[in-house]
Length: 165
Image (cartoon, rainbow, N blue to C red; front, top):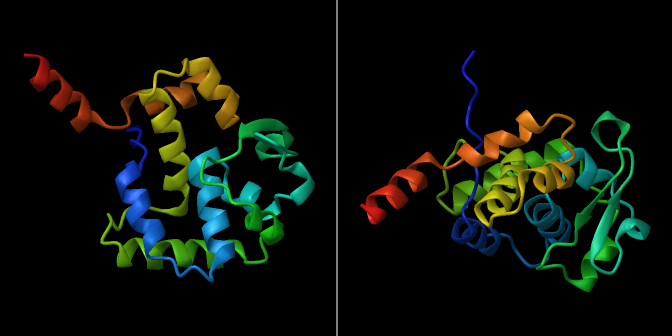
């Protein structure tokens, strides 16, 4: 069985994506930032309660596998976002909105809402965060699941190789 590489948005793509969302769509802005900046799954984003957002982190209670974990609060977090919690949009509505704004930003149509979570994992590994810490932040039971993020951008690896030699 061939394992597919995660589809990850580059930071400049995420910025372009966010620019397409009207400022009044605060629920979408909040949801997308939580997935991209904290690595939360769509169900975790949807169910996040205001009291779980702390000074610098977010407590995810009963995530996948009924596990709790702590993730960082996204760097772009704004105080108004707390009022959007819990997100009052359906999961399907969040997925459709994601597709709409990726299309408006002319991004890869293969991106999905889950690509925001993949982006978080990819950025952590690219920044040199130890794989066991990435595993913890992503909430993976098995470190082999986390290992996919070390392979997320093969074209970047080839470019780095070319630059060195």
